[in-house]
Length: 510
Image: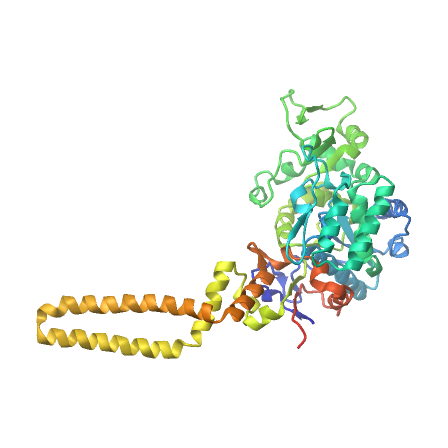
């Protein structure tokens, strides 16, 4: 069963934000209004994107109300849902939206912002099963295209291999059904992932949005124009501590979507006082009609980088809250000055809930979150240290007796002849060294004499971490849950009025 715990329960330190009743929040969210024009642009895009799949959007009537707000969460398009923390983020957004709706008495809708323009293929293309990591293999990745625009050859094989490695059969069949539906229409991976997210969370009211959308980008063309005028994010942050944050502040936060894929725009040759840029083989010089007109005309080919994407999102959504992971939390905190310079309200940030599934072996080992994450080497030492504690009193008694005996022998030798002092000291050191060696062999003997317990301890560690990576960053939510995923989702929805960030621990029922 799942149990809610305080944020400080997590095995590693997490940002606590303002603390207290708003632990895990950067600030208390404010019940403001959402610009009617911006809301309509969003609603039109949602209708259009859902209609392309033959569906009506969840909570459409709520979205069309003037009092509506949204709680936003975004993530990469990780195959088959990737690591569990994607789902932790989404469930956090859904519950936070419900909580704010209860508190404010107005519709608050959770929105998933697809990171469809990301070109970090390696991170998106892997999913773990019970025993192995499965990778989506494409024949040609020489052009860094956005992940969402990729065709899907090879994805079917990955999903089926994952299905043979612990993924629930019914889930695998559903995902393949969605993949087949997109393939029949000649669609791309973004449409597959769109369908998967709707399948998993549409009934919980989650609205999915693909921001790689010409109309959405055109509505925010002013952002692209400012970058090309050299008046964008870097201009706002220049000379401040934000320049030293975790995310590199590029001269221009835009990427260009062209024949060379998604390529960063960088400074080109100087053209007098006019900013000149280039992306791969493509050169940009300010046109006679100016950058504003250029940005409207070329909006579909403009792709925001990591520090511009939050501004694009919030210019459209004006979120009541944005749900973030710890890494995102850090780079979003680089941006308040940029938001202010662009006239965009900086939202209340909320750290995602964190979850850990404790296997029977992990519970049996006695490990608690306060013990921290452990690599294989650290874990083995911790286990043997614990086993040694059971013998500590006896060993301490034996060592005290041994020390007393060697001291007595040395004293007796000195009493007989002073020249035996050196030999007596060497004898004491030799005995102490032999004791240390004996203790090491005693530890190894404990390991060899308890093979079943040792095997269980190794299984416990492998459930906690894999290749030095904590469970929530590699283990798949549906593989962990098996046939209980709906029950797990509902457990995380409990008590939506509790808005603080929580740590959830799942222990097997006894």
